[in-house]
Image: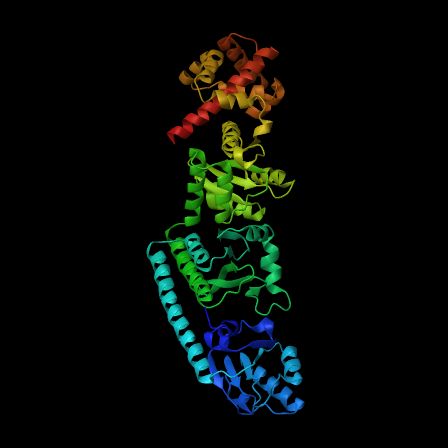
Length: 522
């Protein structure tokens, strides 16, 4: 904390007499660097800024014009405050010209009803400045040690924002170059509301005319995080009415530097953000945290899922990963401006997404379809139903991955296939498949010409033999022979509607179990 005009006027020496602030009340937070008693008329040319000027008024002048000139000169020279003794040596009351000019320039003007020893004012102010400087130096050393310890322990940007929030007792937000929030510490209701419309704050409020430096915007102070000579993002402190100065400003600067160093380490050793998201999802699936707590903790790492319908999306991983990797899914969500927690679930990549617009779910389905991946999408749920949503997505993707072509399935569109996905968890489906397809599967296990692909295609064509022959690239005579052989093995007519329906269910169940068995081996 620095010595301000307001703090100096509260010292014991000024309590010995009555004082009055005649002008510049809004500027009492100006910093005092030292005290300077003076009776010199042209004192302004000797000032360098930040002075508390103490005077009996002998050098100010008697005429209103000279008094106005005096105030203008010391204000423009950067003095912090002018304190005048109104003891009768020069004035027994504050001249109107001084008050009006000081008010126009928002310059602190203070009058003392009686005499005070200027030497004691200097001593007390300078002693307070020195004491505060010692406190600041100790705070700087403590901050340096804390940030150095974080770096040595491998702390990531979330650790740094947490540390800064505790130090300044204010919310802290870290955003990247695309203005996406990636860390949020020191949560408050005011900051929550600001985060809900973050792009307005980041892109507009910091660049409003009249804000001075773009680093200051209302009750926010920010610093650039610079990585390899380029701005990687911004670190914001939302101080909500107070000003950020002294050790607070120093802590902000040191945090921005520490985050830059931590980000360099993350690029070389693997993304800590992915680790945090994986850990968060694991705790949800293990039941360590509720869906509501999941949403709150996601906010701390910049994933704002609050007040939104949520869906779980599971994408089957490919080799090489390509569009099915965690990084690719993270980028996928960013492009659609959909907040999401993305995690690795072994065979699948999971994304818990917050729907920001009514049409965004359709966009997600369309985009995943364009990418040519196998994926499952849950129903829209509230936070409390998130574990159920992940299971719904798992059922949907298991059906999608059993198909020979890539597909994106929504849980609500599965229909009877939901039963298949559920039965696949036990032995009942396997017994049903054996009852319906056992002889055919035994034939395929022995022979060089399997018949299951023919049956699958025929059923997919709803019994249309001409279409099935075209898709199988065989003559109709060859197809007829294969269908007759299948009928002989299964002991039932393929022309029967009920028989075909039962076989459709059995073939899809077989494909589902076969996909699961293959993934287990892999």
